[in-house]
Image 1 (spheres, rainbow over the protein chains, first blue to last red):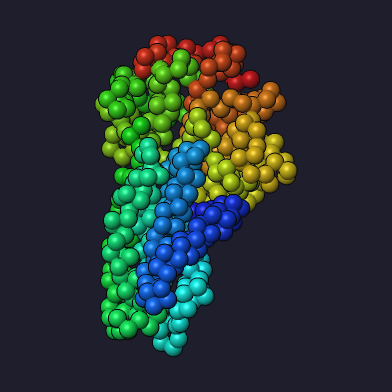
Image 2 (cartoon, rainbow over the protein chains, first blue to last red):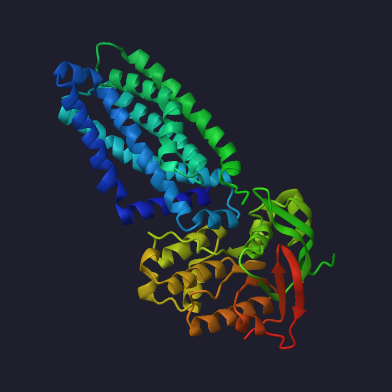
Length: 226
Length: 223
């Protein structure tokens, strides 16, 4: 586990030194939210769509963060250093997923705050607990799937365009679940709290499935035959 | 195979994308030996190092490295091996020290191991605290070598380790390699440079993925 933490710390050190999240990803995500609001141009419609817009912006931003997370491994063949140090691939997977989770969690906090400020969404009482649970479970899913598919495309030509093509369809269930559960947390009339918690359950299962798949598949994905 | 043999290769074939990068290589390297690997570009030197590090699969033949049969489980050899590839394997956005510290964390080395490796490679405080991407080619190579030193591997595999180093750093690297072999480690490194080979006890030359010559020098030690 210490090795996974070392890998996560390394990725976060790199993020801290480059400020990529702050300088590029956060402005991009906020811009997406503002543009959606401008495009919808209707307060009731924006309120209704707020949860979906938050997670859509998260999805697009995740692609940027994941690409960056694997670019640093391939730029100077640093992934070979990890492999040659006999680090268990599952530890690399969970280490990188943990670093992604921390960055994406910071981002979703910004985006939910933006939804409250820009769209006039309100969250109160027991809905806060639901919102926090949704954010944690959906962000975990994003981090796990992002790490898995980041490894899939890491050694491919044209990986910048391949990553969203491959990962976004797989992330569709997460987008639906996170949006519906967040709608419930935002107090939407179209879904009640009980249904919101049911969607959280689905997000939990999704995370467990991709956590297991990622830890098992990471070794063949990172092992090169050349 | 003798128990003091670190590398034993017999008719080794490695095919990369269908191309035989190694086409029947046979040789052995004993524990504590310092061996230079020569050959023109594309003769299979780097592939041979990556094979010994367990990073590419063996297609045919027999290969036992540090007691591990690579045909059975090539990953198992990695804890015994330190590899410095053609590229340095550094994170450009981390400082030189953070890069070495990261490798130390992975292999369980201590902070004093990191300090002594940096000192050994002549990486002063100013360089240590500079991002690897801002360092010169030679400084990056030194940093990668420092990361290799903290691993204390049983088998050192180095791809053009002298490339980009100034004369003083080359001499220091030769001392490090000699010390490593004196303490029982085995060193196999590739080089293009004739004068470098002249000071190495044994030189293996590859041609077309095969061993063209295997010559022991009368000088008997690295410079």
